[in-house]
Length: 206
Image 1 (cartoon, rainbow, N blue to C red):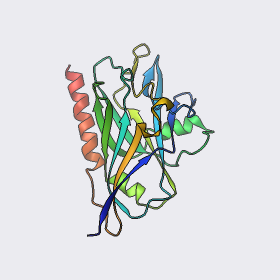
Image 2 (tube, rainbow, N blue to C red):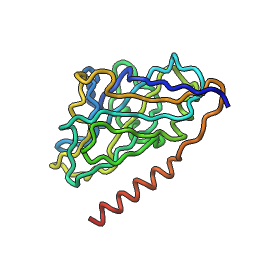
Image 3 (tube, rainbow, N blue to C red):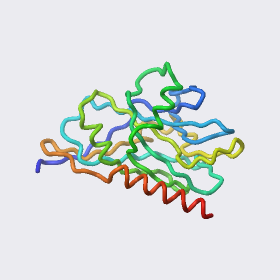
């Protein structure tokens, strides 16, 4: 087993895209959810050009501003997923990117209730495969609320007001890297999807 070391990566780009294809990356806001019936999904891009070795484990931590959460039920399911193409620079086809942020392999899931000042999500084996594939110098992760009610009137979101005033450290990807070993598998997407299904059953019983 090779020697491991820890590394933290901040985002090289982050932002949101709504279901009309509109996006705004200039202020760094990474809201996910819905306001007045418009859905928002977020994304986080990381520069991997200086990464050497095999990533054994990973945790993504996102700051949650004090006024950045709203839910008609008191809690929401937030999921991170794979993105086909790394998001760098301007976004020319927002509708296809919006769809891409919600249809990839699930990387991690968290239940948020608004009491947190930050949300840390352990990323699974699908993420480890993606980051260790050597497919490019940048990697993007998409985020969406899986528990949206579909209401056109109730505001339902997380990470609102997460603008550039928080600085680059508002989003941090903590990696454990092995300079010579093989990656250790993390919990699978099936397990995380099971968590989401169980949460949905609880909400229906309310």
